[in-house]
Amino acid sequence: MDNRTRKLVIWMPVFLALAIVAGVFLGARLQSRLQLSTRTTQANGANKVGLIMNLIEGNYVDTVDSKKIIEAAIPEMLKQLDPHTVYIPAKDMQEVSEEMSGNFSGIGVQFSIQNDTIMVIDVISGGPSQKLGIRAGDRIVKVNDSIMAGVKVTNEKVLKKLRGDKGSKVNVTIARKGFAELIPYTITRGEIPLTSIDVSYMIDNKTGYIKVGRFAEKTYEEFMTGVDKLEKSGANQIIIDLRGNPGGYLGAVIKMVSEFLDNGELVVYTEGRTQPKRTFNAEKKGSYLGKKVVVLVDEYSASASEIFAGAIQDNDRGTIIGRRTFGKGLVQEQIPFYDGSAIRLTVARYYTPAGRCIQKSYKKGLDDYYGDLNRRYAHGEFEQKDSIHYSDTIKYYTRMKRVVYGGGGIMPDLFVAADTTGFSPYYLKITQKGLVYQYAFDYSDKYRSELGKLKTGQEFETYLIGHNILNSFTEFAAKKGIAADAKGMALSGKIIETQLMAYISRNIIGEVGFYSVISRIDPTLKEAMKAFDKKEMLVQSN
Image (cartoon, rainbow, N blue to C red):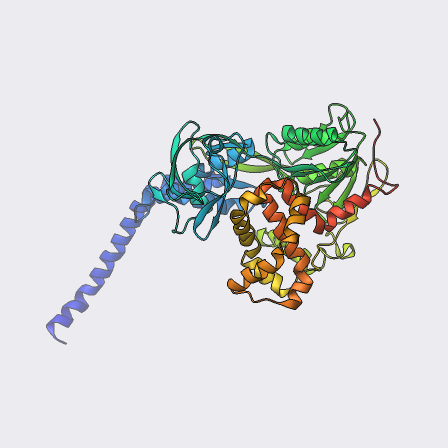
């Protein structure tokens, strides 16, 4: 054994002993530093998240962004609750508030992005852009110093550029057909209403139709204006279309549905673990109590839409037509934080007047909850009423002792299957590429002056059929890579042609043009018209 090895053998026990002592010493120091936190953690386990953040900030090896960690952690925590308890970061609060209040500040145009170009689809009446002379068909090529044409732009980017504080100014440069030079505008942003009523018009001389897109703070006033217009036009029966309506402001739906109920009749009630039962009743005799009412719903009708449908159904005030609704019946309370963010915490459930809980089950987790519509489709629920199976189906009874069912969502009185009869591989291809919409915009843009002479959806149908737009569209689609398909066109031609006419009509005269044309291929609306003639049609007299 050489001298070096001999020294190593002699000193090794000493090194190990020193290492152990050092480890114990350092551990004791670290334990001393953490001792208070450890005792606090043991005593206050419910506040573990805050204590963990204190430990990270005080002891973690690297510098951390505590705010970023907390912002990321909160949504993950809330996923352990129900699907509709959510965290709203401060940066998103303005958009959420605008959606619920029903207005925002901007320049007052509706736009569409086509081929990396911002096309003005419509100019809001009375808005800042209309007052300056901006027109439908104009192209926005520049906003302030930012080029907006020929580059990849998104809806979010455009909205961020065009919206701003009321009274602030934005420079917008327009390209207009027939003008060689670009046209600069300096626009003072104003308050722009976010309307809830998509359209209100007479289908025939006695039937009014009103489409409610969402429920916001001003929806009731808009709804009353729309229905009053129908009443003055002679409507004694009304179709209220809530298909695709995701819900929204509770106050709006309570006031709206009360207009079809008698004084004191129950609209909805709420109840939760810490929330006592709270009832919402009609506070007066409804203005439209004597009118025949049909409410249209589908699998995307949710929340406030389901409250409306449930109140009409359980009080036997009208007929619900369509497919089972989404099943969103949880009450959220919005709680603000010091930094401008907020949490929407579920505190109760909604129940219809008959006692049905609107909320469907979410016990199997978020993925299962949001996959529910896909399962419904796979089970054939969109095609046959008999395929519907609630997990906890319970019978309930309306005021007139009609049987209705619980288990989540509102089951309509009259089921209408989703219409897939005109679908074909050709139709699927042109739809995936958005070719109907593109063609309709190009056609409207090209013939805007001539089309501007037409005033009704019927006039558009007559004009466009006479100009063979279906043949023209087939050639357009072929240039876009979708070859002509005689078999596909035989199956889907009517749908494609009707959609073309509806979109072109919308581009020129607005939503009333679209809905009056697209109704030709709407089986649910057709069933609603038939329902009015049935003897058992539910109606309450004044």
